[in-house]
Image 1 (cartoon, rainbow, N blue to C red):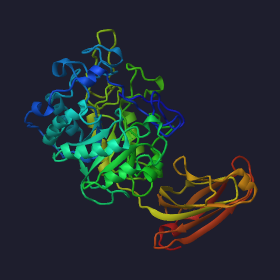
Image 2 (cartoon, one colour):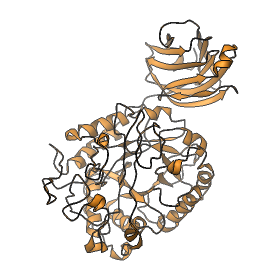
Image 3 (cartoon, one colour):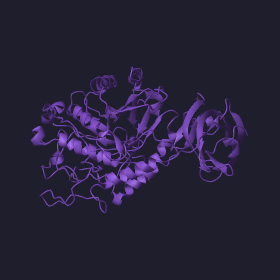
Image 4 (cartoon, rainbow, N blue to C red):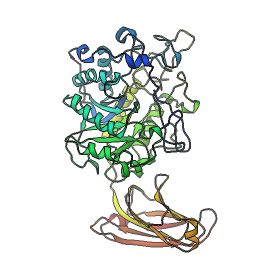
Length: 524
């Protein structure tokens, strides 16, 4: 179970993985009781039947995955209730969810349940599950053989969501990935990808691993995971490691291959604009939710996101696919996170907990409505084309204490890559997803000192007959100069230089039109 709340950039309560006001949301799993930890599941391998699935219809897409939770248990299969009883609920009718599963308070170790899950996943067109995994020998680890064996029969693949179990470190992450390869890598259902990144450039088949809460225990050092990730990339099978963060410093300094958001609760605050800040050769892995409802497990009221008869899901998909950045994989949060009410697994409508509470339904959608809606969005996603990109170089110098540069209209930029900055610069980065920010100390600005930064970006959505409108803003001191270069060839070619040294109201804004033609063509 995960808990979410938001601030200016969306962040969490309880043990958040970001500090307050870091980008996006943080979600937390509850601690298991000592009884839960000490009682293992029965062997999934021995319990798994021979699978003879019905796999009619089109193949599932391996460009779409759903986060999957194999942590549920009941007395009939596991000798105890697991997860359904969180927050003092008393199963089987009274469970820790605002919704009630069509399959009842099931066990993740029940072969019939897992087979039905795979059938529903196949019905939705989802080709990959990302299974919550709490370390070597954990209950969630012990269910993996059953998941792999059943998934194989349905053409579904299994990836791993490595959670912040007690004692997780960079060193244990390396050990975990070696363990996963050794124990599960031979299964035909083990998910591998030919995607590449700057740290894993080979197109060999490699596993993909998601790491939740990379800032657990208050870690703020962007380079914290670097040694471990370099070791993982150097393994014979290599690997793609995706971090739950919206801060691109984890890509640049820790060498994660990409980022995922898991859940964006308040689109007006965060949305998916973070995709445009990802550096070149890193993977954009957006996560979309159908809604979020965790009242019966005690989450804060501001974590509630209504489903709106499927329109929330539509809005999330539309935003995730409208950034101009092609996703390496679209992830759905979730298939079956019942505590947080983010699941697309079919519920039972009008069920009662026996204490006066009637479980929530999907409004005008039927119980399997999100399976159908997911399949529709997968079809749209796979049919999409992505905009052409045009590489340009941007040189910004200023004698002010601060200056920014952003696109107002006529296009957008993605994939920024910082080439150089002056030594005395205090900030040279991306602000609000698409705004370049350059600062120096007020003392240096008052002394007339000049600082510089150079960025390469990819422009999208340019139209040859329209101007690209850029905007400079700066403090009241000094001036800012910007030079734009076409960089589609082997060397940058200057297109336009402009400067701004006037003082106006507010943020001293100055707009500059640049003809798009010289940026689209190989020479001005």
